[in-house]
Length: 87
Image 1 (cartoon, helix red, strand yellow):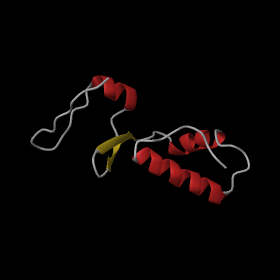
Image 2 (cartoon, rainbow, N blue to C red; image 1 turned 60 degrees about the vertical axis):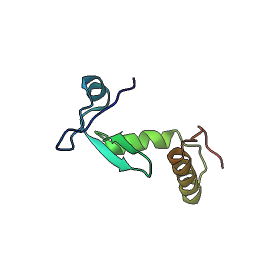
Image 3 (spheres, helix red, strand yellow; image 1 turned 120 degrees about the horizontal axis):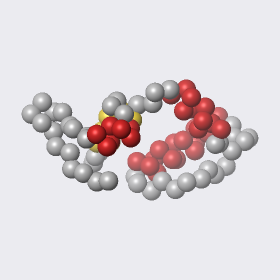
Image 4 (tube, rainbow, N blue to C red; image 1 turned 180 degrees about the horizontal axis):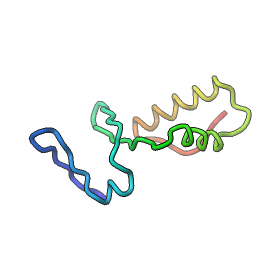
């Protein structure tokens, strides 16, 4: 699915029913240097965090997790995110 969304005179953007059904009505707005990203707001962020934690490899320290998080954030922001963790 690819669409062009247009702001109205009041700055509102209509996403359409298909997007709303899939992601909901609430989004975090992330302003990047060359783009604006809408990230759906989780209905239960603690549950989502617990699920993410289950997918992490065992034996990582807090320092390892911070490093991996920083690396993944930089890669994601630059568009070169690859799956997998390194220790």
